Image 1 (cartoon, rainbow, N blue to C red):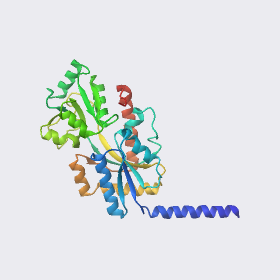
Image 2: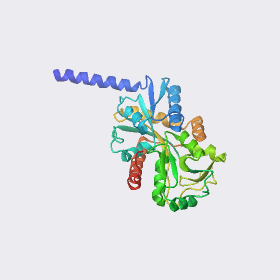
Image 3: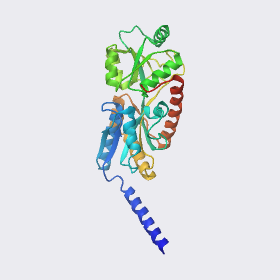
Image 4: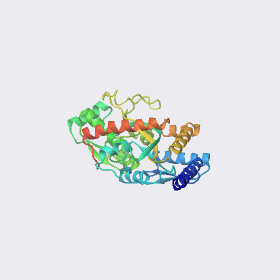
Length: 320
């Protein structure tokens, strides 16, 4: 009889849990962005938050928690309640950090559930206008002629800017000095001022300066030329065969989040990415919306972790 009573309580608890999840969401959803406001990571979080509020009628807020190379905000979500009310915007460094840091306060694969691969964009290889380089070949020749004489900027250790250049150096056997910044804006300012000579950066961060003639674009990191920048060759066709880097953005949740909640979130996020106004906002930032299943994003993450783990090891890239 006692066993039956315990079983009855357990079944009632499970039933209430199912009811609670059926009502999801019924309170504020928090979207953590482990970056400062202003970049596309922040833009993605705010687009999603607004659409959640519009579609579901519950408040959705963005919480910027930068610092520690994205580790502070990421760790906070790893340890948050796994109920679907705390999500994390992730990007390229999410897959690089497991190999870049000797120890992380979380497990990238075990502590998070992939929700969706939201978007992708390439990087542009840009140089200060005062440099003599008009092509990738001229840049490589100069770097080889005087190893360590050129400095390149990045938005921090493990960023796509950093690893794009480390892969470039590895494939061209060149040496340059890494100068990390706390974001794209200060890096681009110093690039314009000539304090660093060269950098890779996300297309939306530098395309305005390139089109205005303030920076010179030598190549783009995608496998094909961009329709919006047809005169800029890919790094591969400009002299580094096989080179390709795709910068990506996604959303994850704590790993133990109930599967039905994850499924509901994935469906809503795919719906959001298909909206005309969202597509336009992405296009304005030079980002292509992706979408798809949770499994697709999981496979993408695993492939990225493997690829960049090799680059970090072979190039000797480190936290600076």
